[in-house]
Image (cartoon, rainbow, N blue to C red; front, side, top):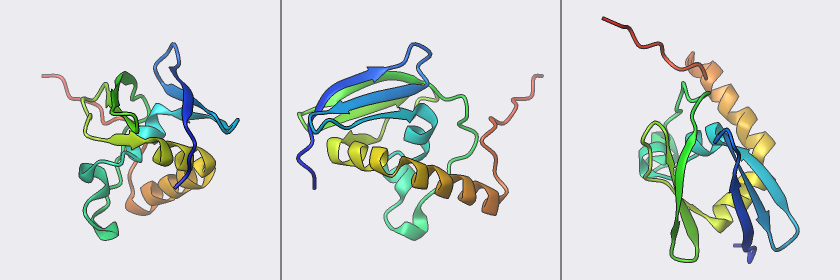
Length: 125
């Protein structure tokens, strides 16, 4: 557990990334896609590692809004309406510090499961 405290959380103009500056001097920019596919929600993480879900098709996901939860986390609502993940400061700094490894692991999972970052095209009737 870190004692890092966020000084600033800033969503980019295109709503596709979140920059977090901590009082430790660390600053990370996390893509909305990474935040969405690594959501700490039970829906994504399951209740055990075997239940964790690989979420495909989120290349274009955007951050719709953020709401503080107490003084320890932020709830991020994405434009695909996913809003059940509470991102604690510890989780966000861990995601920042391990961003490249987490991203590569996600890409590897997609490839292993034959999934894509591309959104599934909706058929028009």
